[in-house]
Length: 357
Image (cartoon, rainbow, N blue to C red):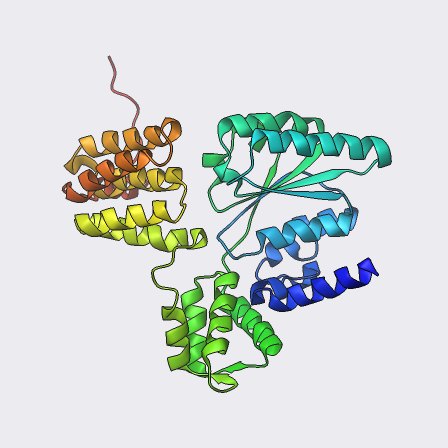
């Protein structure tokens, strides 16, 4: 009887789940936009076909299917699945996973997969605590990140993983995904609404489905028109989702480039208030200091680098001061693209031997 009630509860919960969750692919063939990983002879397909699981890091933009692929790999091959988010997990949580994996392996011979979401948010000490369990094979790691693993994952841990890059969904994949969502909602899009939602999704399938679901709720008929889609997309203004951090970072950089100090400060604090990783912001500032300011103000790179170092040992909320300090300086600094011009010119410069003597 309890199983009957549990099943009914799960069915009702799924009915209330966001559209993106209800449409989560059930097989590898259902995954859109990642055929370079899921097609015949490709890495993930081969891994599943052979039943050979190895530690991997799935690297790609938000809404491209990292969590889905982790679950599909595990369900197809059959090990136990543990899920931690690096945002909230601690070394104690890692030990608990390792203890459970040891017990499971000893009692039934079952292997354990740890899916670690936002692995780039793990500190070095947390990654060091995870390393011996991955190294010994007790735990197979599937990490997910929107940040370059080479910049955010410790080298010893990274060397034990295969990095697989996911691509932002192209328009064809987004169109297919939109059609799946519309069938489930029993709705349709007119041409203008479709163009708007596909264009605004930015390659993010979850964002596309969220926009369609919002528009369907607002629509007076079964066909969602452009005006309704405009209202649906506008409803999210002012909210910050860490999955949108590339858009927010772009706005932040453009305001610094334009010398618009108040907007640059507003955007950096908006990202921090939304829970953005300060290290993500700091890396963008270091790049900006050389790419957009360069030799026009030699102190800018030093200040940006100092702010980046501060993120490593100060942390939130106090690191807000260092990042805002650096933002004001970078926005006010004179701009120059000379360094980039030298990089472009370097390929055409003929190499000469060093001068004698």
